[in-house]
Image 1 (cartoon, one colour):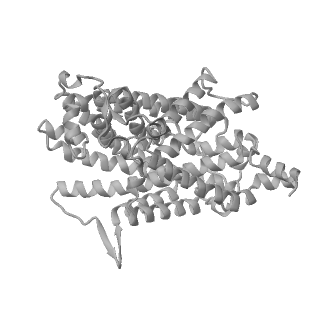
Image 2 (image 1 turned 45 degrees about the vertical axis):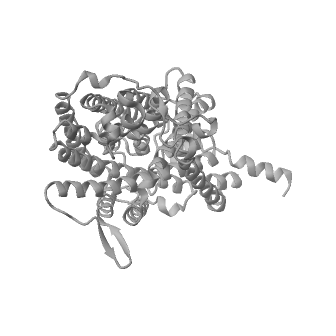
Image 3 (image 1 turned 90 degrees about the vertical axis):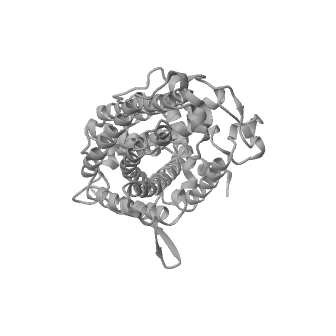
Length: 502
């Protein structure tokens, strides 16, 4: 291989797909999607994917183990980080209103290889997210039935193996619904979303009657070493491992660690951006829908955190085996609230699973349309204009993983996949501004490049607060992705073939 050939090979990794080419692909009759969603649809989709079981559990865990009453600040910090990144998504989505979200945006700015990596990360986020939450949906379904005096088996035997039937069932149901049409799925999801928000508001109102100001003191508890210390390499944060700092809970670093944990509660807003190609008047609708949804979700989370830490001391939560919002109500003598919360969690998870399944299909659809994955997957239904093939494939994959594996051990993989996408999108906004200042932008991130850089820095910081085990698993996933790219994606890239032909 000559030096010139090598140089061309390296340069091909950074080839970018023009904005005009991406928009042109979305107009292809056999590989394009139908625009049917409005501002309210997007707002409800954002609430649907963010408000799940996490609102009833993740805040309690963060308060008990990391931040104490300051978990409210952890939520605000996570919301600010998410908000900064979502600004970047909104600018991109209003400029390049096609499916694929961060993958498509990165392809237009940072090149094919990084676009593949981020697409691969988004597949990780949505695949594990949908499977993990489908698993929890089955758990909450059992709790609801138990609360009404009915005991159902969690699994059924299929010869030598066992199937978790509830996760398998919910994924299959929503796969069918998504195949029938995005607008129909959005309407069904909206009904569930309104119900679960009503339950959350009910819990907040009831809880406020039991709030005691004394429970907010100290607001930021004094830092203390984490049980087990630095001896457990895999469970400490990457920051602690690299810096040699003693892992600690509470204090300022506990508050920051709590922000990394509760960031899980905001996972999914980037998935809303994957539907840009199915949105009416996306230049205005995308920013409005995304920001309105994020604002409502942030208010709900902060109110829940205030009620939770005001009802009981964070020390009492820390003493519980698995602290959640129901724990706080039980400690103040409201046992019936546990059943209401279980129903709310079940309904909450229902819509999250649906939106993640939609997001997974749209990411794979976009990568397939570009040839980086088999292009046959990007074929859309001539009548419903939905990516039937890839939606069914996504549903089957999620259903099998949720039904037959213990996928819940991969929870943090969802966070790291999302945060890595946030970092590249934040950088990509700056790059596209410089390369294509001529493009019309219905929304612009203010104070650029300061806010996009701040967004990238905050996301990297949250990533460093995830465990070393999560980083090790993430590295393995990336290695697999690089192999798939060089074995298949690079050779079948439509952009690569166009460049070679030209």
